[in-house]
Image 1 (cartoon, rainbow, N blue to C red):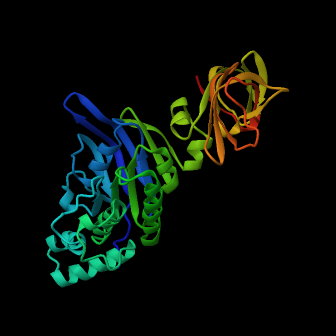
Image 2: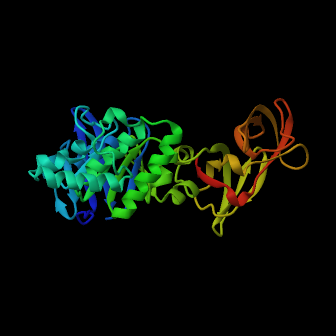
Image 3: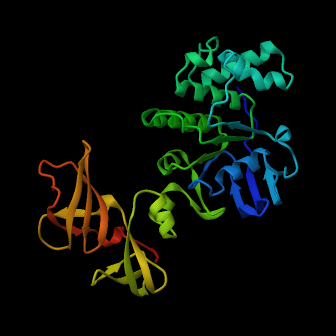
Length: 352
């Protein structure tokens, strides 16, 4: 099966208002052809509105929407080379799987036999060869989602849009289906825009992530960039678990900083910025626990054994913390006093 040349997606100062409510505040984005970019953020941040503007399901109040180098701002969804995979699958229950996948092609005027042939090719692409004669009700949730993906890709879109595509699946199945979606996107070289509020899901499938907050972009970059170099406490907390500890930046020099935290001074490399109040980003797996010795004092307030790891909640000099440690034959117990340490090179500082 062939596909259209993957298209770029560009927003130029796009504003979307619903009456007095501003859903998007002058959004500027640029999505390269053949990449999978995720719009990530909490409910109400504007990510689904952005997706609907790409799809042509909502008109922009102002600004430009450009797909594949073509200004489509005033074109309806019918005239845009995009396909969408919906959260609810939106399969016709009375049609066979093959008929569902072929539906968009027949609506566009393709002969039934040719449309069904392309539908079978699409089903093979998503690992459902031989399932064409079944009804959607005879498939699992994960299989139904793959049918929805097949229905979208047989239209050979320039851009594939996915709106919370895994939210109706259980956790184990979500991991499996997201891997399949990523493999299909890469195999076909599709441009894909993916919406989710699940940061783990976003990090697992994306070339780039655009994190949104309050109708605008909070930060964008690769999963690695966002995790290792958050530009705010919001990003640090949203992308991966993070402990945010109050500190003060006393001075900066040579790309690092001297900080004061819990009455102690320490040098933090790779920490450019301003002096004054800040927050220290301390990832749970960077925290080292010991029964005695050097470090900050804390007490175990909760311990949970999860097989290959133990999760701890602590309270002490650095405040309330969440830590993850490898499973140990002699784990710490609730109420036990411990010492906390960490490698200063693994710390990141954000504005307080």
